[in-house]
Image 1 (spheres, rainbow, N blue to C red):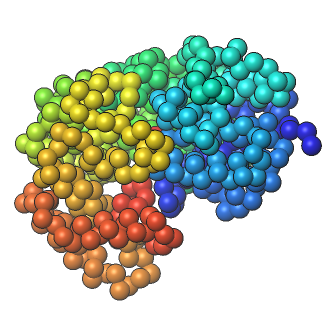
Image 2: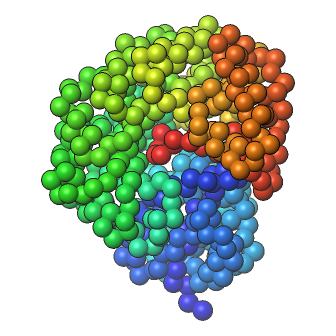
Length: 500
């Protein structure tokens, strides 16, 4: 049987993917695969209940099976998918790509369920690799990959230059049904020019922002709206507003071309704080309905340390600007940076309260624990302060992100763990009530008790001795291991609608 397909597998990112986002990266790979004469097949384990049967059946026709990888729980499901492929067709190469494989190529390729790692953007590599394998070519000559020799040595071929987005191919939207996804993302650019010390962009995209042609972006959006009836999209760029004039032109074209769609995007607080009123009204008339802003901290020292290039004044002005224009603004914060004190944590919690006073409708999406990712300034600081990254894919798939930071004392670790649940009951409101209680009326008194408890703890800043939320955490972990109902902490926040 001729092997004429390339299987592109998107593993689940958590046990219960209730709000799956379109696998934009796989849609971008498919055109290059087609150019080399192979049929790309997307297997999305979040939206295809029979994905195991499909993968096992199609593996016999595959030149290779490509698997996406992101640090954290997705690796667990990536390994599961790789195991299905290996058992179904042992001779079919298993190729890993995505952020985790790019950041840890040598560690990844040493795993027995990984044969080749594709580093960085694979728009060209995916098709070239299929042709190389099919024709028995030399992997050594293909840039941007890593693989293991029979003697155990690791070969890393030269890096590819950053992908030129002016030459990008149109995504293969015909390979999926966009209506099956909660979040329909449109990628208009890659990279970000800013220098945030914790962000993967420092290393992976080298702080270089590259954009698609505007005509291509408009064709994509028009196709989604007119062919598929999509009425809401998310601009999933690392930083859609890197060029505000370009973003404004896209907004203007949505209006002029009568493309009626609601859209969301990430947006830095300093951008929003300093935009003029006419620009914001243009965005609103074009359909923008929510902006997501990673504020990170309320401590001036920490904002400076993480190179956020954002002041507390910028943050407050952004909230006021959103209020003036009745623009929905969703925010996130991070605690646990290297060297950050508990008093600075409290400054962050205080600014959350100030923002709610300035703009009561502002949404706190989450307070995250800092996670050290390689390739940036803070990662080097984290390692210098004793952080030891996991040494296996299985370990990266576990709970390494949950306050496993050597500079945190026992109290800080407990606070981070409890805050993950307390802040949801304080800020998620009716959406959490709907998900937690739903038709299970017996949960109503439990919900009300936990919410009252969380509100009191938030006001008094008492997050340590919290046995009720420790019990909730254990329940969430059990649900993560078994099929079951939603509990806080087991899925993404209720208003999440795009890349962070």
